[in-house]
Length: 449
Ligand code: ADP
Image (cartoon, rainbow, N blue to C red; front, side, top):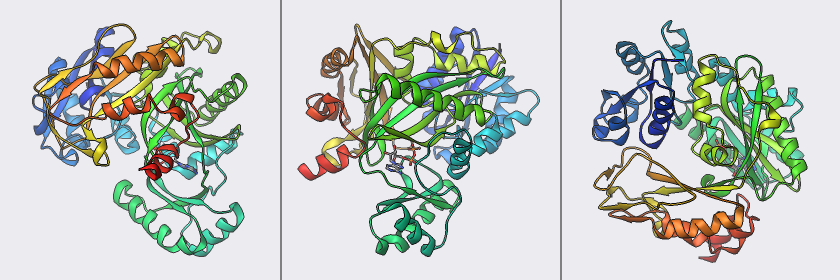
């Protein structure tokens, strides 16, 4: 096992990774920007190094500086967390190339293949995994897009190759919208992902977002840990996630889990990853692979009892997965609520500020992943997450009852939070029934306003 790991991230995920390291007897190295001098992850680490000014591009994204710090500190591996450099194949390759360092993540070439959506779609098709109807080659001619619109029927989505979180995705409802949409998808792809290449997909009207957690070692073992349902989304961003999905029956669950397993095997994948699908009318379609630990990995850990981050470290150190697929069982229900410093009454605008009061809930069924305490400032430099509240129950109904109690006892003053929004959802018939699709919040709630 590694002796010392550098965690190239901040906030709750940095602490989550360091906690796993600590349990494995690994020393931890934090990096921080000028804005994060007093942050929780810096306190938690055994050692911490400043890597530059507040803008992420000058600190958390400074590849050379981070590798340099890792070597100076005598770390033998780098864990990227999520966001920042986590899905950057170039960075992964750079870490792989350093003799004294190991990348805690999939091989950089698998990241590169799966990071480009058209390549990932090709790999999945080779593994006989159904993909959303669409192209496996980039498209840049409006006439071709119109032909595809005819073929699949509108609406279609024009999506940036490197896109994610709904960025670089444009929905086209009729032929006349093609030119503008194509141009703006290309523009967003270039601006956010440094890649202006786009492709076309059928746009499903009311799907469920179902994703499968996988773990793969370097000895050819690939396991899936069941699915998460991330259908509650605002503008294509996940708001509440849960496991298992209230919308899958045993047969579909088994099929989708196996499809995910085959897909990542085909890609020569190792470490943790997530295979995302859209599910509509009992059919599932591959959407993309996230080649990193995800924000919502927690709910899978809660229902399987498997520590995914611990396995990321063990697998990266060359260990073999010591459980068979049949050993993975789903027990109870778990829901994750993203507690963000945002004002739900003002279109979820970020509201940075001081945590004058911060008293999270406690007691049975509550897990809190955070890196803040009362008196801390939620800055405006990075994302607006304060904490992830994860609630478990014997079944979904029990879990939602507990969630009400936990959210009611979550006291935050000084900044607006998404807590009132989550509480509203727990009284929302559609969410409570589990029938919500990815379009639910944007269509139905906005129209009701
Ligand atoms: P990511 O999963 O990385 O956020 P995307 O930007 O591809 O990546 O997708 C974000 C969300 O957009 C999905 O969870 C889903 O709600 C929606 N979406 C993406 N592609 C489609 C599609 N073809 N049809 C319907 N909804 C889609």
